[in-house]
Image 1 (tube, rainbow, N blue to C red):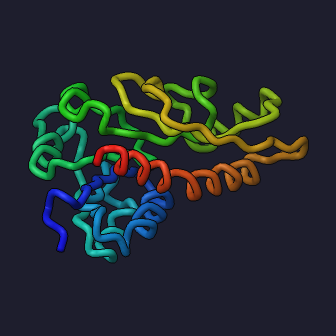
Image 2 (cartoon, rainbow, N blue to C red; image 1 turned 180 degrees about the vertical axis):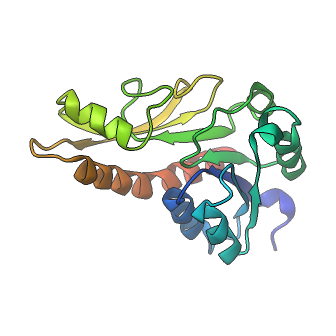
Image 3 (cartoon, one colour; image 1 turned 45 degrees about the vertical axis):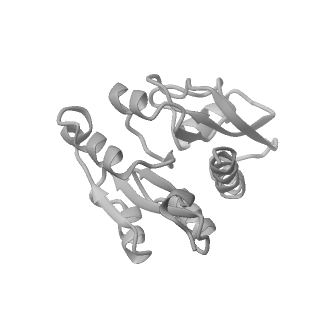
Length: 196
């Protein structure tokens, strides 16, 4: 029988459709040693909230004030005491108070090989467009710890894919999604295992 201490808790932050969040939920759904306790979103219309409800996971929407002014989000995190906070397509920068409280426990995934194509405004198709415009031979994903600056935290893992001569934004996006869906849950699993 599992005592609460043997179950690792994950909180997921997402802003949109939540394909990575969904993939992570599916990866861990039959596990007794890992629990996804909450999905939080800054977008009340985010598909990821409904999906969390469907999987009987606490789904919470918050606004800018709850994250940056009132410490409401920080209090939720402290009350839950997660082993890992996973940013899966979350577009706001994490406040310093949360980063300090959960040092080396917040990770993000970025759709490029950092330090290239990172920073404010570099997300989604903007990244893929920049990669293609610069005629890069490869792109990929970076899973990294989160600090106070966009995409500048310590790298945990990188996985790459070839950029074909006739690549389009859509085809490159699909390649990146495949890398994300294959590797992100595995890296999360490895990080949780390393804590034991």
